[in-house]
Length: 145
Image 1 (cartoon, rainbow, N blue to C red):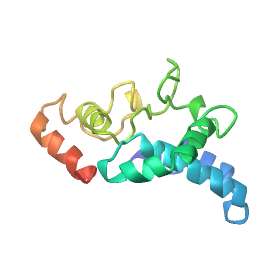
Image 2 (image 1 turned 135 degrees about the vertical axis):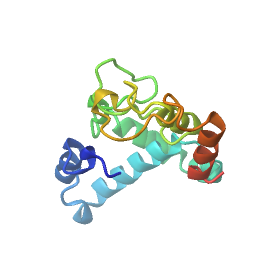
Image 3 (image 1 turned 45 degrees about the vertical axis):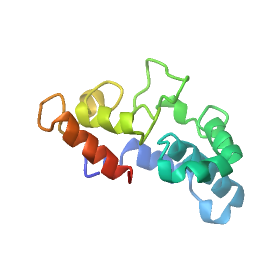
């Protein structure tokens, strides 16, 4: 997005450092691919069911990489059962799922998402800018349903 967080954010700097040399490091490339598959699987996209089933081992490996022994994403993000009260970045539990999309459209400033750091995304539901049905249609479109 075009938020203040997208312009050389801590996350961008972290990724630049963490992924430096990825083009020459096949092991790192494999781990990043596994992590991406794990986060993508959180969406439970109907179009991805067969791929997720075939990639079950890679998804599980990616979930493990989310934690301290991998990329330590959990230092800032919550995911599933690992959900501490002091994370500083959006909760990735169910990331991209219908519920996750509806919840962030409803109130992106909720502590689960951006909290007080939300600098421009409107609260479409909370502020009654869109109806629930309209938000459901957008979520379906974003998910390719």
